[in-house]
Image (cartoon, rainbow over all chains, first blue to last red; front, side, top):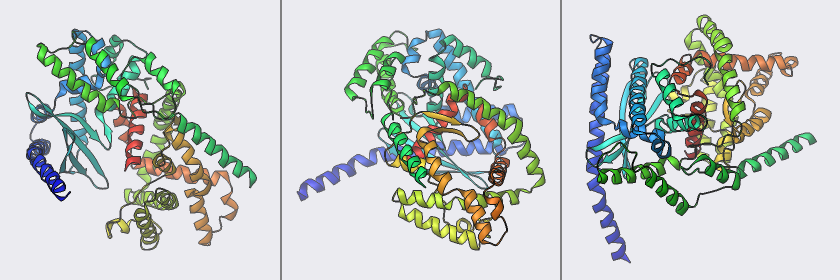
Length: 201
Length: 310
């Protein structure tokens, strides 16, 4: 019994570090990129367009936007689109995600961003971070998966317990349960520039 | 007194209904299919073998359609997609059951107008009149009055340590915190609030959310959480606490306590004060939505789910 237990423990110990190493590097990488983004925001000399381009260039390699687009659509709906629609949806969705992210940064004043821990959950790595402001903390979790060719990439971000991919999934599913894919694309084209058309709830 | 018991019985009945209609984990299939599922079952975990089978059929269908070029990539992409589908598809909030969708959309629109036409202008004016530190104080004051709700629900969820901390917080904040206007418990002693309500308690007890309901003025909710509001309003009502406390304090409000205007006035103050501290947040949320109602619904259900798990 003792031998069994100890061999089990040893096996567990042997299994752990292989992944732990990667976890640390994923966390470090995310932390560095986030810090560079913050430096860009604080750099008041940059004009906004140049600033935004730099921020996207910094943060984009961390994300798998194509996958995020697919996941937001959901497998069933994704396969209902023809390649041209898939391509357009992908472009609209990705630019939307990026714009939304940049918009959030405009709200940033001088909060502190703390990258606090990386957790391994099954074959994913979750990197948790906090945005600390005057009287509240906003929790953000970057979820990484291992892409076979490009290594660890973010496939979803959770802000205050709300998954971004999940909210898009529900919205797209809801729209597509009543309207066609073309209708959805039209809507995305219209809302792409971040103006909410009056009367849509 | 008797009608109260009948009322409670009715609540339990509703909760029971709620529990029966809970959590249909909706497999990623066509609408027709899943509707049949939803209608068919009680508390349900979808049979995993079935889900697998359905995923496979879908996998076969979209082989030709994918953006990726080589066959090997396609296969691995499909596998990966399946894996992710499980992750998101299994989420309870993925596709919330929504029999009241039509009404909910209407009410979301109503609340939206209420916010932009009434609440926001009033709160903006109010924030010009009342300095921020005072508004934060008032916000803390109301939060402190919700102590009985938090206490009872922490206890009902067997979170005794949190219940104790809540009590310490209440004592500290009500005394040295000047009737709760300030939060020394957090600032000095590092004691954080542990917000729990009846909806969460019911959730911890295993009762599902039931259909999503958008309440007038109060906003997104679901059957379980809306029912949870009832005991809170009847027995642990912060306005009652406030008015009773002022009565004990010797303020002559006894005649006014029963008046509906007094209550409504106190609620309005709470709401306006809170809104004044959060102007812009709602507008930002709205910008992020492609379709606002399902977006809000999902936001609410996901956050509640998480709050219950914690």
